[in-house]
Amino acid sequence: MSSRSWSCSISSKGEKVWKTTLPPDYERSYTFQTLCLPGLPSSAHGGLGWDGSTPISCLVNKSHLDALLAALPPTFCVIPQALSPIREEDQLHEVRKTKIKGEGLFATRSIEEGQLILWEHPAIILPSTDREFNKEIYEDLGKAVASASDKELNTRWLRRQAEATKMANEYEGDGGCDTWIEGVVRTNAIVLDLIEGPKMQQSKKKPPQHDKDGQKEIYGGIYPLINRANHSCAPNASVKWDRSTLSASLYALRDIEEGEEIFKTYVNPLLPRAIRLKTLNKNYKFLCDCAHCNLEGKLAVSSNEVALVAESDANRELLATWIFTQPTYKKWSTDLCRADNLFIKSHMDALALIEKEGVYALQAIFIEELAMAHAMLGDLEGFKKWGERVRKLNRVEDPELSRRFQDWLVYPEKRVRRWGWRKRMKEESNGRNAKGIGDVDIGLIFEPIDSESEED
Ligand SMILES: C[S@@+](CC[C@H](N)C(=O)[O-])C[C@H]1O[C@@H](n2cnc3c(N)ncnc32)[C@H](O)[C@@H]1O
Image 1 (tube, rainbow, N blue to C red):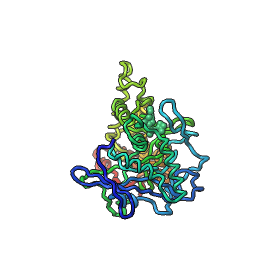
Image 2: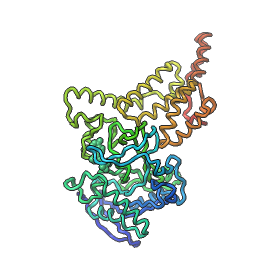
Image 3: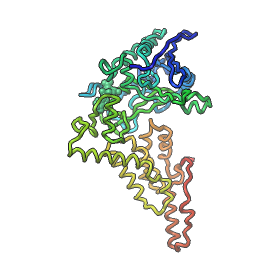
Image 4: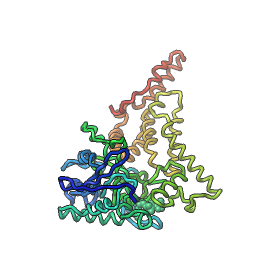
């Protein structure tokens, strides 16, 4: 399927180097690497996730190799708390056959919103190709999986390769890919932004982020378990990728019941249904059968279904703009002309719409705003209710925020900066108004809360 011509040479280190020339006349070179991630003794992680020496088969642009290696953790690194190992007996998921979607991931017990479901390292990393590579390169990548000299590593490699060969392949046979690995990559790869990273910025080591023609090179990763999660336009889970460990974490966006299928989304769920269906069909070759799309599996809909689709599309469009147009609690808390319940009600309305459309990935931002609005009103009960949800929801997505709320929830009146600020301002303003409008210090009322973090 590849349209580009490639040449292969052997480097002085004995590595195979693949080269291609791209317009406007510059060369890209790729080498194979087997990256071995260091970690904990295997007994400590119950066979999951962090492995003593997790092999990752990589095809990397030579100019990106240093940056990639620099991103890897040191030998004895500390696993981030949110990624602590899950013991086998505590596993929350299993792979099972579905009716029409091949295999899928299912919850083996109830899962709380924000909870980590599983995390893993990729089996394969390669540049996002858009059918650039030729058959030999894919074949070499497939073989590279088993080429490690270390016997134990080799066994792991073979196990991972075996896992990868069983993954969904929508491009098999007549599907247009010459090798199994290309088909698996095209059906499953998760986009990885390998090159830019806070870690590298911190170290002031500026890796080349772009090719010479200014094009950014995007990589894809194959995650044998996480890639088993099927798509829904109302997903109950999401994936967070961590550049510093190359690991991906699957976590719950809402409470998931035991036995429920675990879904992530492969497209922006806020797009209109017709565009979502078209994109999924083009990239993954399926007609989405999720509850928000499946009007008997048709791209065209009957007249009585048109209204349903139009309503759902309008709701999603509204949510997409809502995020940017809603006032933040900081603005609202200093604007005493706005009623208290206006802010709270509009955020509750957004949450109701999110629930209706099942796009739970959006709720965290509204819930955090609600928690802070209650803090500004000095409403302890309200803050505890919403603050606890911020803590739970962000355990994987934003552990720092989750920890900050955990801390605040112990003694919010003392720990949240400007606790009850709006309430006090209103009381003060009412007192002044009682004396006469001339006494109101407009400047004070409208003094904006600065953008510093609330905790300091
Ligand atoms: C990344 S794989 C997901 C795991 C896959 N079901 C398996 O057996 O390994 C993507 C493929 O799963 C199927 N799939 C995922 N979500 C689907 C959905 N909502 N409706 C129909 N098929 C779906 C499609 O065949 C798609 O190409």
